[in-house]
Image (cartoon, rainbow, N blue to C red; front, top):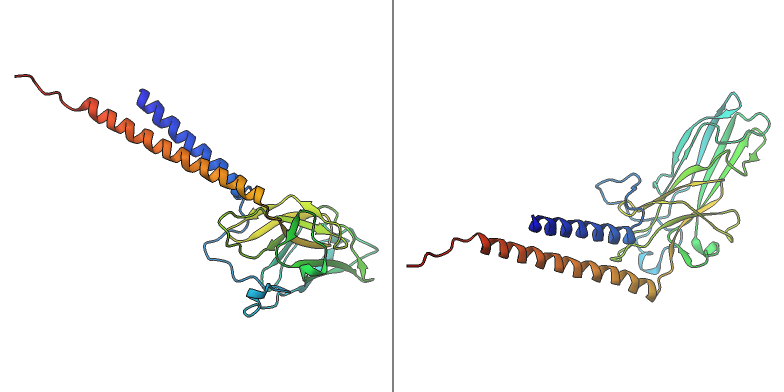
Length: 251
């Protein structure tokens, strides 16, 4: 009975350590977005890093149309040709101005160098400008009736410890607000609800020696606990085999 309790406690401890380390390395990894088995294609940069410039392909923007029925905007889902930005709009997303019959949705990729960097973060990939205009009248929509979902693809990260990716939005490219984000490191996608058609991007924390050391402590602690659990398992098996072996009879 004591052996079972020790082994069960060891298994529970290993599970807890694994959950803590996994949550620390990928806090949104439990809520993937559009995951799949095939690796994503190479990221398309507006202004690629020097080591990626030779093979880079320009990203796509796009212009999409959304209809109104009875003065109410219909539902819609839109994706650029390279699938680096997708939008999902609910019915009634666009507050009508006058009597619109349709709306034009424009998506334009921009270089991160054309905007400011959020304090303590750096933009990972392109910035995208989303513009919505209602017709007739060419009236620009300043805000959605309620927040709508945007999904952005970000570049692959080759580091062992995956950074936390956060979706951000801005009206002017100078002041950014963070969006509650669902991050899928498998498909390199960040998803969140934005309040208005504006600039959107994905950011990561600027790396520091302190944060790296903090992660290494978690990894080292996990290795030590795994080693202790392995030793306990070996010791319990050895003790069990010794106690159940037949005793020699005396002549």
